[in-house]
Length: 128
Image (cartoon, rainbow, N blue to C red; front, side):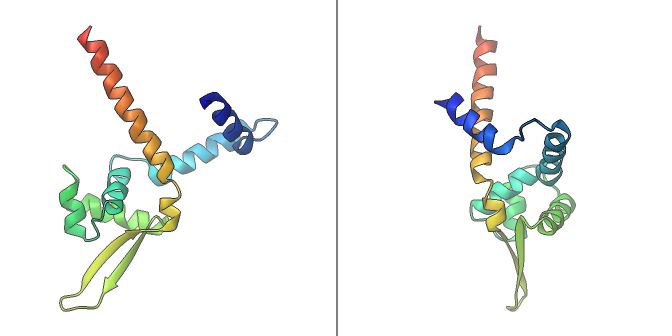
């Protein structure tokens, strides 16, 4: 079933004849928008309900304030997150995932699944 599903997706996504340059460009675009150490953890944090800067920062071990600020700006420019200023006293800012960001939720779930299987595989090979 997995091969059948994979073949169906491949036939929908890949051109016939294959255009390697187009495929590589698409991969590079994806890695540009999602790549790096912090973007996926930030998306995960926001999708898990953390909306304020400090809550996001606290939920991601090792990220610096400066790096989080930089990544949030890039992600906002790429329409992955929405930055909303709430005019209370004091003014607060909330970050939410856009529908565009949520459109690759299945990809993230597959990455988590693969990562868990990979870690388990490495661990079981080390136990031998």
